[in-house]
Image (cartoon, rainbow, N blue to C red; front, top):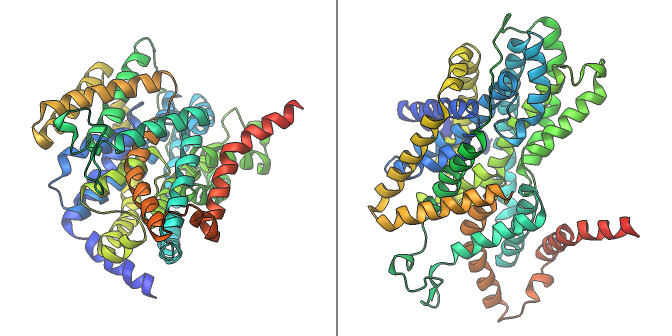
Length: 494
């Protein structure tokens, strides 16, 4: 009953005219960036961080969340009509959806994607509503040793999953940890990694790093990669509406995709890629006509798209309740919270309950808005694909530069922006994931603080992490995550 009362209170705030406007702006932008190949939600949220510092926290965070789950809706358009997955989570959608488009069934493919996204998004938001308070109750019992062990587990698992290899992911993580340590140590008062540069004594702004890696770096990479790529958009043909048989074949995959996607999104080692592949494999096993798969089976679009959207909502559970980002966009959202002096985690539900429940309520509203935006306006979204790439990339770079310069009017920030952007480009070039950099930069100082508190409690005894059952378990899982794959390879060779 308490949860329902909190949710109703959240709706009263989310349904104000201002917050409805921000929700509409967020989901519209999200759909648009989902449609545009190479311009994902992480880039968009990073770009908007500098220019939303004066916006009310509830409105800004509602908009950012809308961009995140809205992009999951829009990503299917590119995959189906262009056979170009905007993100790795829509690879499966491209496989079956584009085949449907080639057979003149682009309309039903887009429809099952949009309706499935709505069903999954709504059901996953219901799960978020009731699961998050339970996770918070458990997390409130955590002490410094448990929090440090949980963050170490998140560092290792997220870095291993997001990278092409565990080593590359961990390398990116340590780059982020190094950046997070730049500046004056709050406890000793000594400068760390400032190299005598006065501008670095206050540390490096998270916003500058986020915009540099995701906006500048990704844009340079996309421009270099797409220079010689010729793309052709499939023309819409036939009705967009689904037939009775399409509905019958889609309902089961929608529900099963939701059940698979939500828990994976909430896990520290989650993400949207794994559940979409699991959903696709599951639907292929359960299908009455498995021979259609690879030739345009509607189940192969419905299930993975539902899993994709449910996963994004699951990510919000981990972010809000534990303060742990499990995707690139969630890492940028964590930076957005910190921009307003808010730290996601169990205390957020205590100290900023109105904001949290307004954000959750806005997700119900946003899913309805997205259904209305996606089905009737599909023709408009397709036209976005005709925007010339050079102008699009140039616009992003100009917007990124103005946004970062506008924060402190510092030329040094512009130098940092493009130095980090070049680093982001090189990381993408050599297949190093960029999300662990942000995760390490934001969570690194927090993990350091928890480590110091734990050692202060134990008077310098490191065994405190093994004496506490939960922290010992979390650290054991972390060791298994690192050593396990190596052991398996050794066993296979013998």
